[in-house]
Length: 179
Image (cartoon, rainbow, N blue to C red; front, side, top):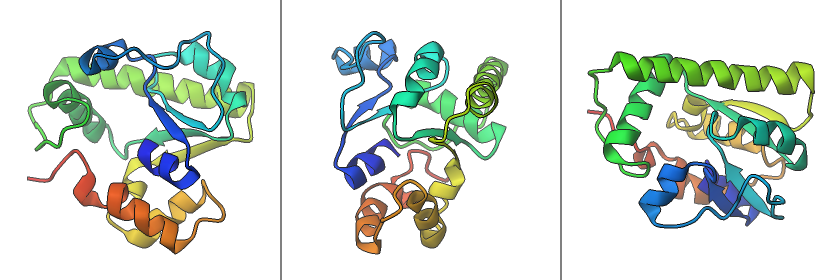
């Protein structure tokens, strides 16, 4: 999703700036710290729990804030477990021996994600909040995916979409590969 938005808007992306482990793996320093101003023309991908307070105070400064949910709990558990096992950007065949520890972690994350969404829709409502479902984007249904992405870019053309479909959104690019 980060690459898709960066391509469509011609912005640069900052993936998970508060994920210390990820930047250690990459041997880099994060380009964004919690006290930094948000750069112009950028897309920031953040995972719930990495900087919840930062998200609450910074969300108003973004054109769009996307809450991306997986369709089911099991998918979220498998994704989380495999990210740790295989890396954050490697294709993998899913591991089905789900551990209790990972289910607790995912349960906690979804609870926090729901609380964030409640904050932005109930406590301090913002007009820039978008709720999206992972499988609506990565289902393999070209038209459905086009319609979802078009909610983020009203003037999206089929030509622009074809580029991101071929590079990022086609299911062949999913990290989780079916067995």
